[in-house]
Image (spheres, rainbow, N blue to C red):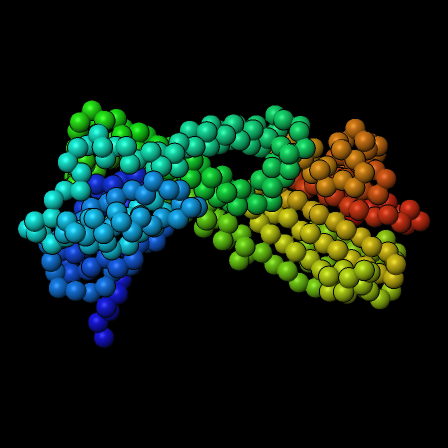
Length: 376
């Protein structure tokens, strides 16, 4: 069964000449334009035909509507141009090759005046690009641990447990800023050329290799970050806390707390579960257990070496219930632990290449630090 419909990504709004050539090439292959969307154009199968396509820009914003005034469309159709479709500020007209339909614009400076709304849309590209540069700098400084702001520490924590996702988000935002910046450059250059009397090239052949290479590299990086994020997602494990522990975590039985596992404010499954994930930085165990009326929360981070664990220690403190930094904790000397800190309800320990973070509010029970040290 032959397909009578197809969809294709069309050139961006700022690439007016490329858009016209794209639709002409598709018509020559036997695909007539039916509908233009924001990113895709819909075509229907037809006999191959040489046709001319022209883009007319709407002077209203995309929010006010994209349709040209009916009288303007009627005037163009009287001249031999058939209105096909429109999206955003782009409106597409067509005429058969060899017809007597005159060019919509004989004066390039007059056509340049119709580009004001399109320039207004993309003008924010410079501002967005500048904002992204600032955010990139802040994110990099935060990830490197050179800023102690709360937001920077949160970004660094996200980097630890979800490296691929942080990369993906940063790359996507930067790609959007790059696209807007390039669009602003292209539309501003085209406007200046037309204002100087240079007519629009309706069939451009220039490939814009620097942009293509840069864009391809950026999309390749986005693809890699996406694969990393997907791998971390599908490789993550979520399961009920087993009777026999299967990881570096503690269980309440180690504290001498015996009894039936229960649910407190949540279901039994939610209060007694293990989540394991692997990022590019570390492996993380997120464990919860509730026995009788005792709740134990713990996050264990396995880094590649002890130095890396020390480097990220201050960042882990962002999980604290009542503390903002290690200065709010009391340093505890315990044999078997490289470092140990006790807070009001939170406890932090470094043991070889592991960082342990415990939350246990019941002061009648032995400290998690002492239990961990006793197992060394």
